[in-house]
Length: 275
Image 1: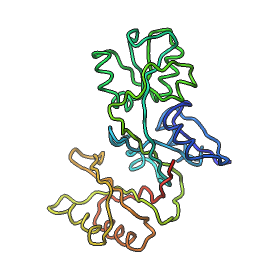
Image 2: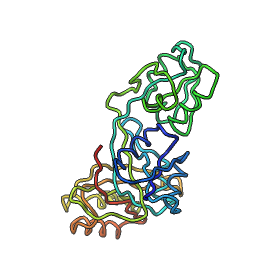
Image 3: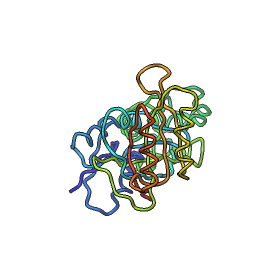
Image 4: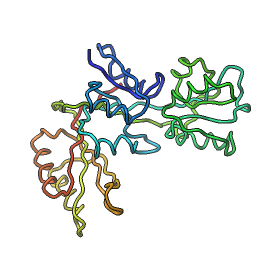
């Protein structure tokens, strides 16, 4: 049976994404308490695949996921899922919003609900947890008037009462999750490629790199600069493009870019996995 890791405990948005990924297939879901442990578990062979958050429409890139894929492990993205994110404020039965003295959640969730929290807590205490479900578990176990930000599944799992639904600042909030594995996947005809590279510091260096894709009519769907984690002022570029690295034109473009780059790494060519 194939083991698939996810960021736990049960009830996280990553758990939801993992359930969508496995569907009715015979996979064994394995829970991990942090993104770092989860990614290292795939790299070390403890699990076959992992579902991890990659990017949020409001808060941007999940830095830990991206930095580990670029700098720390040799894994491939083999699929992606984009799911809507709807946050709920939840507490033990009998609690009212006015009773709450502290709100717990994952830092991304707290940031995605900032306006709501600023409005009802007026700068009240917020506590960061490893995941949204971990926050729900802590609230369940505590005797203090605390609340968690998590999803409906977490409220059901940890027997919490939903005080308010849809507290995210943007109703179009969504998160992109990716599936990681040790082996790359073949092209399907509806693929995306993610890569990271850096070019020499000279006039037109980045322009010449990106011109390769323009000349070959390859569509870039994302480009982001990130610290190289070497010297201050050293940056690399994280790029998503349409197509698979095994397609002739894209393969040629990537080889040309590799020749111009001081650092070059393909993080994966992969199909979309729709909910």
